[in-house]
Image 1 (cartoon, rainbow, N blue to C red):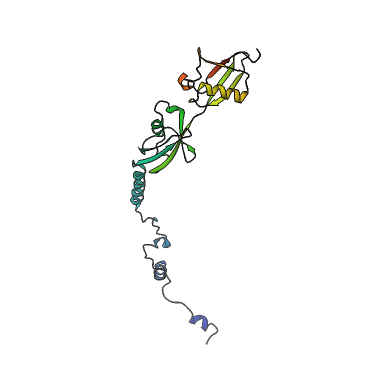
Image 2: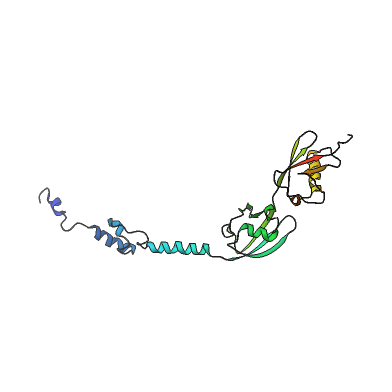
Length: 218
């Protein structure tokens, strides 16, 4: 035996293992079909098998579910003691709900759901309110500017428009301790009646009222 006889004996003859042979062996071990493994040999196939229409159908289905109008049983409450239940379509807006509480002065309110103040033109579906939900109607606070006739000083007061003129006078004294025993509040050319509400006089946010009266001891 020559020195290189051993080397001659281990000479490999026959076909080299091809990529397809490797895939076939791999299939036997993994249980996958050759179609599943085309990407192994560089023949890439989309993950969804080229069925893009399936994705489009799924998106269309989700959109149809989102756009479907459904009825919501909504419980509404507020800090003034209102507690009512209504049935309303999910395509209705937040303002539509507020109008069921106060159709005349609905601009004075906001709607709160799960701690969020909702945009008035948003639909209930867009607000993700389920078929049974609970919302709160909150009254907006307006800033009324009180101006003293004697010296021109101005005092801003946050108060809802549903408050009475008497409530405003009380808050004016409580907040700023103004020394008026019986203040006269004037808006436009009218002296305001204590029993009337601010909104009855069409007093809006940032409206200015004049206060006039004799000072104590004056």
